[in-house]
Image 1 (tube, rainbow, N blue to C red):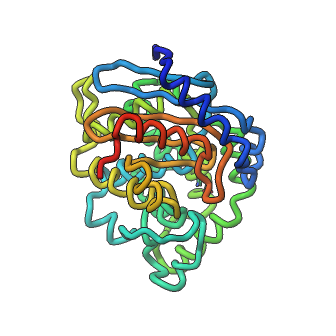
Image 2: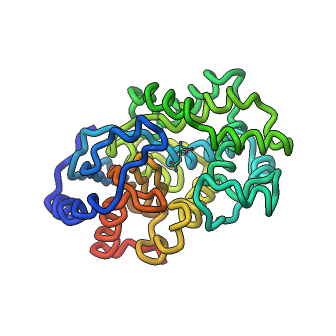
Length: 309
Ligand code: GLN
């Protein structure tokens, strides 16, 4: 995809890059620990096909938790509202994304929302398909369609690295299996989930996917409604209430853009009716959000009055 360099965005990147030194890259997935903490990139994709960008836009990264919004959209299309929300809730937790505590104290069989790991595991397990491979290929095709890029794949290195170290996610999955929320083999689910999280792209692709969510699930460039309007609305609502983990409230107040982050340092933003945003900055704050990425979004939101509230 062609993207024009923007002077204004370049200035924002220069300003926000100062914040990279205050965070650190995620290393609980060993392969993510090799990222360069100083990297920072942003792309904005408009519904008319125009795209502006700044920073290290050639860098690719894995979606990690950003994939949770996409798997949720696919599963809602596969199974419908009632089936999905019988198995996963709609409430933010205020806890870290990988926390197990509310599973035990609130409802062991129904994780509080699809953006925490417990909820995302239940969602991924609902993707339709006869095998892990078929489920993954359906999800990947959906991602490729939204990004309009059939070359998007996944990083087998990152997937393998997470698969080998996903002890906490396995614990969540076994807990859920005990309470009959999962009937799948846990290793097969881990295989699928770690591949989902390892889907790899650059921030131009991510901005285009954000644009589809921003446009209520429509791709104005292909003329296709990729996600039904009501499902796109549900996804954006979760992005506001739970998209930035246990920092979503502060993010809504300071920035006010539906957004979803991942521990690779990616952030996908969807400014309703206007454009999609893709950011990559692997130096993370305490909650696991891109340190400089948040600063970039703050600059964008303030300068262009983007808060939806
Ligand atoms: N793959 C990661 C995990 O499950 C995704 C988490 C994230 O990006 N916050 O731990």
